[in-house]
Length: 315
Image 1 (tube, rainbow, N blue to C red):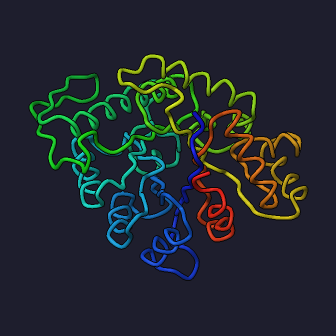
Image 2 (cartoon, rainbow, N blue to C red):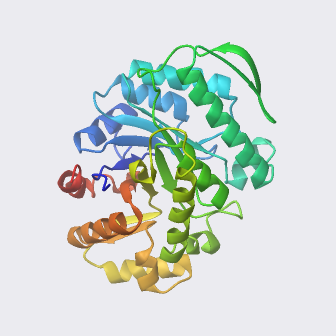
């Protein structure tokens, strides 16, 4: 199954010269499907409040966090806030979750940064509780990290099945879980060091993405619903995106960032650089090879990519 293209935009802040209200209305008018907000203490708006404000002033724009760090909030609290946003927006929420990666978030906040395996355990429990609270009248859960007893799932989301889940990550266990659980999977580099460095960038090269897609497919074989791997929507967070007729010069800069050749840097699905026709060709190739149909454009480039969004959305 080939999914039609749709585009998200990551808004760390309002667009230049605009308020938040003006920004989300503008990206809606430009044809973007979803406005995503980050969940880091040193950048952007508070994600829950920003999503709620966005749905209050738009009509069709979807909202989500890319992604909520499950270490920062208890799932019983998050479930109520997210269900409220979904209900009030009449189903325009996407629930983005991750296990946390940015070391400075933990260091500056004082929240303990446990080893990756524990963080992933917590994220899996968190996601499981959220979905049950969205879809069941009352939830009891006893796990390693959370214990919930006869908790009513109120309010309920707009749809009886609840909002779609987006699970993002780059390591085997997270991606297998995403394949088994999520509706949308963000296949990203694995950031072992806690910061975006050359090792993380090199983990976004094509041969690594091949392997990551395989982990998602393995997870999908264990799904308990009727979905298969082909039903999953694959999301691409773009570290670098630019519409330009000077692709070669930008490729040199990417090579320095990634620690690879310019050709290899351009081949990573975490970068999208070139003329509109070149970028269109790259997107079509990546969808055929890996299934990527849901790119997320950096907010600073949202206006520049608008013609491409208009021409490719739905195709």
